Image (cartoon, rainbow, N blue to C red):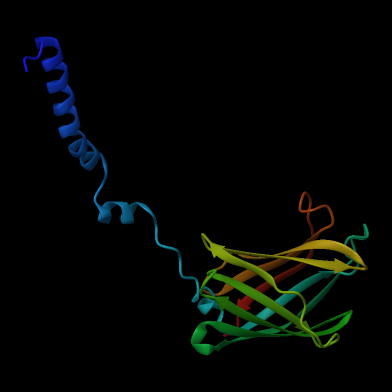
Amino acid sequence: MKMHAPIRSLLTACALTAGLLPFGVVAQTPPATERAAAVPAPRDGQRDFDWEIGLWKTDLRRRLRPLTGSDEWVEYSGTTTVSKVWGGRANWVELDVKGSAGEILAGSLRLYNPQSRQWSLNFANSAAGTMTIPTVGEFRDGRGEFYSSETLNGRAILVRFVIFDIGPDSAKFEQAFSADGGRTWEVNWIATDTRAK
């Protein structure tokens, strides 16, 4: 069968294009090693609290009546002891401070979840004898942020706990409440720890 020249040219061009198409796709797709390198590996934070293991001197300020419009604060001083649990995948914090408003004996069991790569901070006060709802979060760029939903005087609130200004011998801790879904925050707990010599 005799083919007209224009049709033969068109079929030849199509065959060449189809034959080169896989090469173009391969050339545009980076090797698997490059693709893996482009996506950073998830950060393993199970050693985030290693810096805090040991004995600390604690200076604490606490707002007496949060979310009431009151700006009355009380001050405490004492110690915080942080101990490793489960080889560092958890830790136990013991707070023992005294001030004009009395004494606070409290603890916090911090647990690391290797699946979510986040910590849950489970606080307990000796006056209540129960654990609160844990705040959950993680460290990024040397700052830890942890959140939860709780109730205060029957009202639903958000809780934010932040650990910042972390150095070899000092760190700051701040708790704040929000009654408007996180649009505004009122700080009610400020602690500064310095490593005991």
